[in-house]
Picture 1 (cartoon, rainbow, N blue to C red):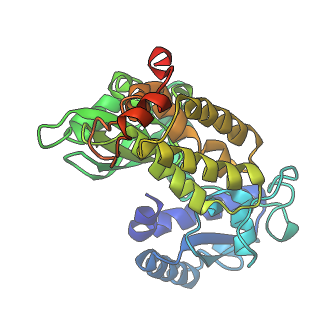
Picture 2: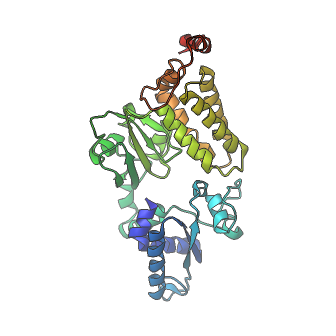
Length: 354
């Protein structure tokens, strides 16, 4: 979503940054962009050059004492650099790892100076709000989540791409009306909101309004605005393993709960997907999730267990099928059933638990 804004309307972002800088008394701005987005970098560079030429950036902007300029800093695409202190470290040329807070960036941020950090989408909203007024913006959205939100819809859905919708809109309207529903005659199964560390919500959750509070309440997050739709051909245990593997790979490794915890969760999920899991593994997954969420240093670890916890909550029967019945309902996992004697020994007592 941010790449699309930087490619199509970078002036809006720069204007928002300049207004924010004027408000807080900043004289320097940085746009942190993944190096894999060359078109966004090229258009942003051209925009900055044009703004300086027109006197909208630099010294004495608009014949006033206000001085402000913007630099582009290229990042390597590390997921953890979405965390503000890791992003600051990367801009400074250091390894992108988070640090404990306080002090918060507003007190001691980039190069030890007070720093205002916001998402591209946030800065892009500033100019329209000033132009049309706060009441106009507050009139859009839900009671506690104002304005609009851009989502990237992908997966098993007819219409993929970017959509901008008012906060509070129902998931069903986004998926079935705007997205065109699930194609190929398949049934909707789940939608993951919030990116790799978001939760997977079942069909019975489609009528909730999309807002920050509502998504957290049902075990997901707004996150980066990703929305992945899954149909009845998806195995939710394998989906959980896929996203935990991503979080495990993207962990910076600085704190033990995230570094070791996500690796152990991935091991357990792999064991279940291969048909070697036990009912005790489910309890261990919940314990690990709780530890990782409450003791990780940054948001990556704190939200990493969401795919596992949400699938355990809403699709527990699929875990039971893998563990007890040694089968994958969706036919995704390659489960090799053990010999009858070994199976009887392994499943002893599990039928009652299930």
